[in-house]
Length: 76
Image (tube, rainbow, N blue to C red):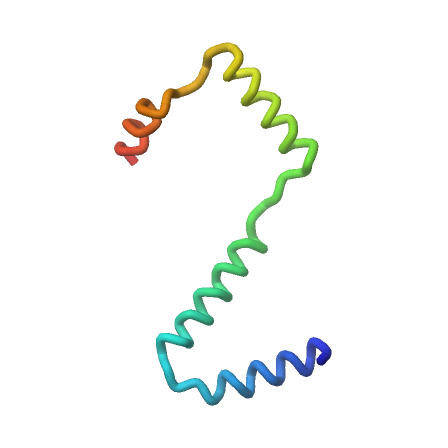
């Protein structure tokens, strides 16, 4: 089945759905997909640079312990 046929099939199936909870699930999936496509992605080079910076911070002792992180998160 090509993309156009898939869309037509999905549209036909959606027209027969009577369960509002099922429609809500589909709506949430589509919203989540949009959020993912709207997110700005970083390059592999930028990702690796951020990892290297984080490792350097840890080696310098600049990090939070798990307990400190829990306390910070409680304030969110």
